[in-house]
Image (cartoon, rainbow, N blue to C red):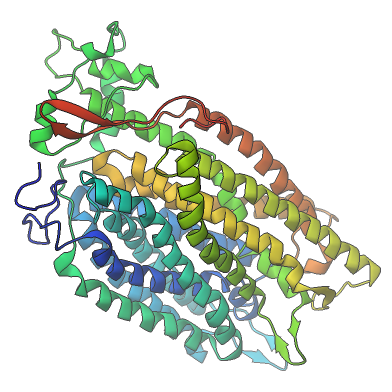
Length: 583
């Protein structure tokens, strides 16, 4: 399909004209995108990593309320991309949805910086006694936070998929480059997060919250300027369907209407367009898979019906979404574990010895930098050494399958929460030995004892966070890749909401009557070890559920080329792998 050097996947420029493969896209276009991602992550983690401390020390919220509010906001940031992805796939496209949303994001950052900088918008303290935040102060602060969440809803699902669009799947060389794209995309994200947890957290606690939020605001504005410099070389996917999500409704309805019809003996007898029609339209044909067979009735040919049946490609697109939903469900508990980094891990660290030298105190939230540091070290090692080594062993271009990658990440994450539990048991022992009871008393135990759990969660994220982003993009129906990516973001969002729910319920149950809450305001007189033990148990059960779900999953098979009348499939074998996950 290549004509006069144009891209083969039908991508166009901003004016809708075909683009030359040699002058557009690939890594030279992505270079403008990763800069934005680094600054956006710096802004997000500059807020999220230390927000629990701001709420408790500046707005004077209690521990459970602050953890709940951080989780609710983080959850919103990761849930709103569902709306942004739908708008992009159905109406505006990725570029324009990102453009509008990024402006909303910046407005939110400016409002937040203003809120924390002006004394009239913060509670006052007199002789060590602090007033509670007024209604106006609370409304203004949370309005700015949730404005950022709305802006993130349009940027998160579209900037990464827009970057992936810069590689032509029909070009073997570009397709190979795309294998590394998500690794290095997340690398830039980790770099921004590292700056936030190392520098911004220190600035916020020692030089002022206004400066700590103002720096990433300016950085975000600069990154948008750089992003738009790359406009002439960006590739844009052409929308081939008016409403890509319509099939998700149409297929089940048609299958229900045809429920009394008999399925044919062979899937080739189901309704499907001729391959040439897909080639002419530029759309991809998705081939039959023997799962969720109840949906196959949507493609049964019924001569008595006035409505045409759905095609196999439409049915398989719906099956893909159902399959991804099954995998999505077993990512919620791992996302709950991840939510501890910016909440309970930080509160745990504030009770420990944070001295470095005679006068320097390490901000508890700065330990999050070890998550990003381990990620930054692990991504190049994974991409440059692990993948080529495993590629020789397995013959898989990715080295290991996407689901194998997720499984390894989840196992490492369980090890991290097990270590967090063991460290907390040790901290409680030290508290008992030294008879520590006060909420502000320092436990004589170095904060660096928390390092292993942070480092392991960083390594786990190289496997499961990047793996999830790539999995949901790769396995989504062609016209729903922005929406498909929101499986990744919404999983993190629901995980945060789930942690908020669990913290609230656990506090209510364990703190009722004369009981001692596992997660009380006084972290030195609570039982955080019990809560970590609870997370360890449910994580282990969840791993078993993941192994079962992945053994049932069948990967997408598409037509990707049409040469001399032959259809070449991007096929993936369906045998069971050594980890029990399908290849």
